[in-house]
Length: 396
Image (cartoon, rainbow, N blue to C red; front, side):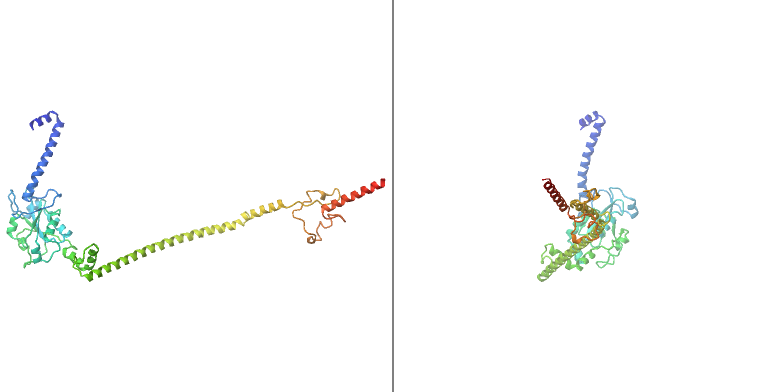
């Protein structure tokens, strides 16, 4: 050890720091190892919440420090760490609930340095003086040692606190609510504790108690029986007859069917609602599109619409596809002999359909000439041939 210290001292400050850290770690381990047996031996306060509280020894509390009586004023001012204020709180603690925990929290925080001792009465005493419990005494003991505010648990605690019990466990004060507790033929089992100046009052938590919890179970008995049957408990476990079991199971099936029908009904309502929303949306869109279609349809028949354009194009196509009119036989030099002026915009009509007042009826063609251009040309050519033949004969 001396050699190691000399080696670290020769390395300077870094060596001193390393040695001190190693020594501190080893010292902390040794301290924890020595404190744990001492805590188990003396029943001192818990230093950590990682372990449950301890059970009090039957021989009582043993301490090397003299245990002098304290007043409430001295306890509130604070005591040395080796001399905590030992506060005792007792009860049945059946169906351990938040009201129990809050009462123990108040008892734990009465003084700056408090060691909380909790006494739990046995099943025999409880059944004799108060009534039947739901939890067994072992279950109630286990519930208390795992409460974070509890430092020590006394099993099979007495119903009435005697001076010998207080002296045995070195109890400084007793914590309980201030309401007189009438039991075991006494108007208040804490009367002598109050007269001795050792009583410290805590507040009850309204709305929660063991009796209230049991009342809820009894009131909804059928509901909880059905619940446990669904969870796999048998009729014998629940002390239920065969007929009642079948009746409850049938009722469970009816309730499941009702729940299924209710679920289907809710889903159908949701589906119908969604369909209505979609149909309204479609109708709204259809109305918008219909108005747009009607407006486009009306615009197509307007002056600049598609129908007017189609009519113009069809008229031009008909005009382009119609044949030219034949030239009219007229005197030489007449303007009507021009082939361009003889084009007719429409096909020739029948003679019966022509009006007698038509300008083409008599004025265009000379008397004795054929109305058809091809006929007039052929007749003219024939006349010329006859004249040539007659002229040749005369020469002969």
